[in-house]
Length: 124
Image 1 (spheres, rainbow, N blue to C red):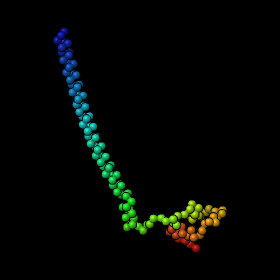
Image 2: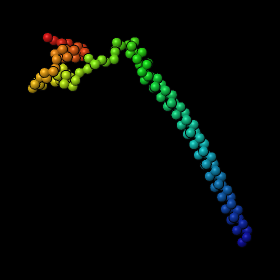
Image 3: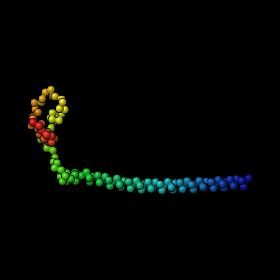
Image 4: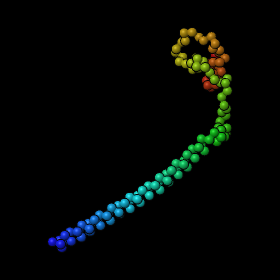
């Protein structure tokens, strides 16, 4: 009876040792996977930081101003170029809609100036 119990306990001890070894190997592999993921995460964060720096450079106002100066003849807006909402509707509104009443403050010179700014041909 003692021999059977002793064999059973030895078998149980061997099974426990095998289970612990298997769990330890699994933990080790999981730690390696976590380490690899952390390395990949750090690499991606460095790439993101580099891309953000590139975007900041590409969107810098000084750089864009230099390019605009070389490629176009654009200048900043001045107050004389701006129209009120009523003036805008009068100039660029639907031609089929006839306004019931013309705004007395609407000056023909403003309309001509707006058409000239929009590069539209003014037919008289």
